[in-house]
Image 1 (cartoon, helix red, strand yellow):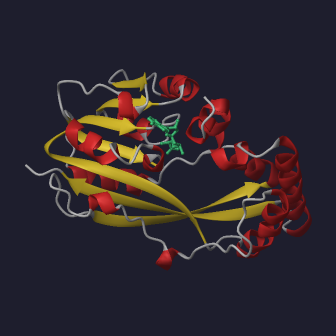
Image 2: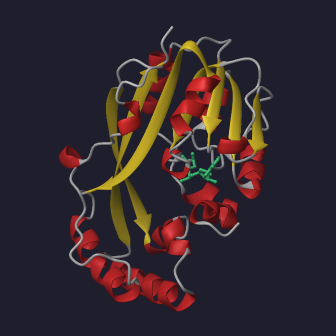
Length: 260
Ligand SMILES: C[S@@+](CC[C@H](N)C(=O)[O-])C[C@H]1O[C@@H](n2cnc3c(N)ncnc32)[C@H](O)[C@@H]1O
């Protein structure tokens, strides 16, 4: 795979180690808003190594996850081995054949932007039963945590990544909002409900560099640029921040119900 969306599959074990799981209250929010019962059937699009799949499967739901990357899917299956009602299929969602039985919940965490906009929501709607719920989790890096570090680290990006827009600043939470025009009252759905979940994670320099290597944009850099960038980031964390920085994440949960 040589596209950006395929880059996550290049090191599935690293992805599994470094990418955060989701806050328990966010998962509980999905369950409540979708009105899941022990018999509910869940479809997940782009599960990665199971960051959201594992808590849903461990709650007992029947989960089918459709993942583009075979290596990610293999790690996800390993993470789901204790949950026989969870299955991972390797296929681009756009090409996946819907099973005859519809789902009560279709969920997609930090992955909907990788799915073809022409079919991502209509495909999800087709997979849902009437009254079923589509739940989208988005993840944003927002101002907060080690704020000064994130200002200063832009110099590293400006030096080593030619695509960096000069003077980029972290958006603040208040001005960050996920909007999908396609969800603005499509014929199949009711209004969108949104909730927000903020959390901070502290990383050592080594951990933070490993996290960066799970981002497709970083993986796509030329080897010299990547080497220079990671050295610059590591130097900043070690020399100016005593080896640790804190990143602030905003997860948004959007849910929309299919008309009955
Ligand atoms: C940023 S990762 C998110 C993974 C995981 N859901 C998480 O929350 O960490 C995006 C995921 O979407 C998958 N993906 C990208 N395009 C896809 C497609 N067309 N069909 C299915 N999965 C896709 C990638 O392989 C990757 O696992």
